Length: 305
Image 1 (cartoon, rainbow, N blue to C red):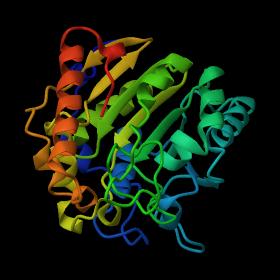
Image 2: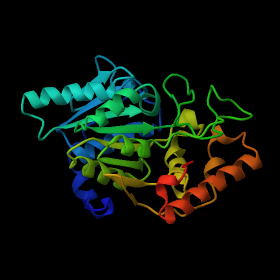
Image 3: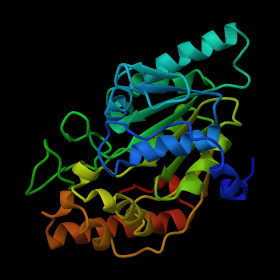
């Protein structure tokens, strides 16, 4: 399969199509995961069934209202992979699975932590499902508690200053590749074309696909609603959130960032306001070491910030 950068995408043709999610949800102003849903549906189209694990995006469809023009299924926080597998089995029984995309759209708490077992089982069975983690780096819906996607030293309601989170986050895209995902990738809402192309590539796979998409959270990151995209873009351009894909365990770097100083990303987010100069230096050193290993062909040994 070709590098994702070789996949063509014509924005002018795509934007004249009907949007499959409307406005007027109960999500926060500036919510990047809602924008992520719009991009998912631009990429995959109306023949999509979306499974929602309980989280922030559960608030987008509050009975009796829904913004969705596709089938949307709400499951528990821990069972997104299992719910999607059940839907896929039903489609197969009806012989309607060949042209329908089954998608899980779940937060990092439902992915990295509470729902990891169901996700790992889905990938192990090689179910033809696209699992997307909208990653805002915390359990945002329940009060911004730490998840295992929370970066080291970031503040959450359960890891307050002066230290913040003392532990590094999981490298989830790597974990899913090693669990057997045919396609595993990172993405960012702030790089929409890259995300859309990865979704379309995932849709061509015969087995499971996993995409970890960085989705800044206005109240959780402590930024203004109009600053979320800039905050996410700085995470990419400082090298703190690399964009890559792994196809059958083969790594490809999709974007070379500007490698701005990490302080530019950190100082914009209120969740990092407590950092000491020593902590900022440690984060910078971690990112530099990570990229040195990536550029030397030692991706699997690199510890991601």
